[in-house]
Length: 138
Image (tube, rainbow, N blue to C red; front, side, top):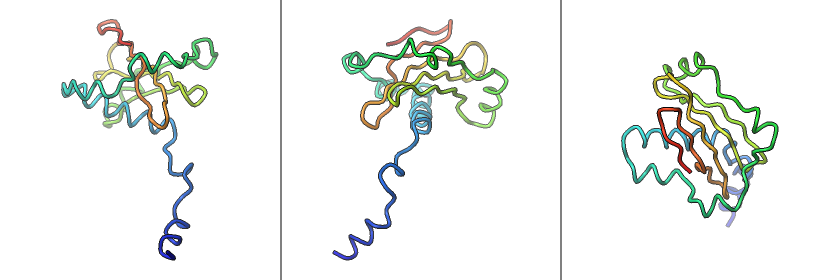
């Protein structure tokens, strides 16, 4: 019993163990784009919430932060891509919704726009708007 209590007393509080929303979103999208670029289609679907779940919460589309969110400049996005990082700009709203812009792999053209929804501790894609050469998905 003493060993268990000692181990628990050394553990970080639950709040400290959770990833920040930005880190959790970045990890989810890194995995999504990895699956997407390697054509692992069943795995790609696991990164999306189904409509029945997303319909429960309304995206904050009238919130000023949501409306003002913009992608990072293309030159910065390309610099991140050259270093193997996913170039994202993230606007987290009310701890439940996030509007994310992800640079394309070639850094050419407009970025993908993703609406991320947090349910419990999981962030997944609720809506994805590809650039002009892509298709909208929701």
